Amino acid sequence: ELLGRRPDVVARRWQVAALAKGVDVARADFYPNVDLMASVGFSAVGGGMLEFFRSAKYTYSAGPAVTLPIFDGGRLAQLRPQAAGYDAAVEQYNQTLVDALKNISDQLIRLHSVDIQKDFAAQSVASAQKTYDIATLAYQRGLTDYLNVLNAQTRLFQQQLVQEQVQAARLAAHASLLTALGGGVGAGADTPAQRKLAPENVPVRAVSSR
Image (tube, rainbow, N blue to C red; front, side, top):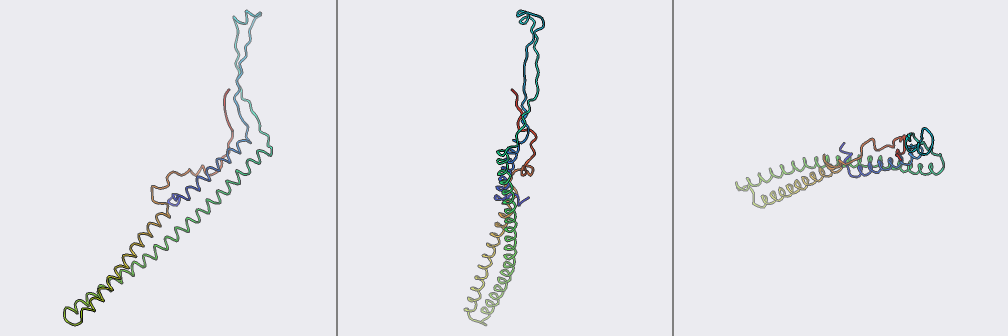
């Protein structure tokens, strides 16, 4: 569901839907064209022109006029490129899905790697903090000079900086994964329905009255 919200996947779906519609339109030329035909006739019972105008009876009849298409090369030539374009669009859509899944897999691997780095960074900060606390306590008791305290403090700051960088990388990895999954729950809602992605069998091309 989330994968279907990716902009590239949505674009390919619309392309497939549009070409499926094109196949339907081209294929419709192979079906009978039903055109409602109405005819009105006038008949008079009796004789003479005056009787015709005085007691004219109207007869009305309506019936379908069916025109059968000829399976000529022109219609076949029109259908073939539409069907070929649809097949190509479906193949591109499938490849887009494969690429999207690979992208998601890459982002998951990246996020897992950053999580491991986060744990190491936290352990390094804890170790540096402990070293700094020991150096500070030793200096306060006169067991060491202040240079050791400064060195321990510098290492602590360095490890804290690394931890912040890893945290920023983790946030970026989360954002990349969210983008790979389609950008969130509300994104990509305007997508063609599944039934629109395949050509339909159109029984009648058009119905009109005249």
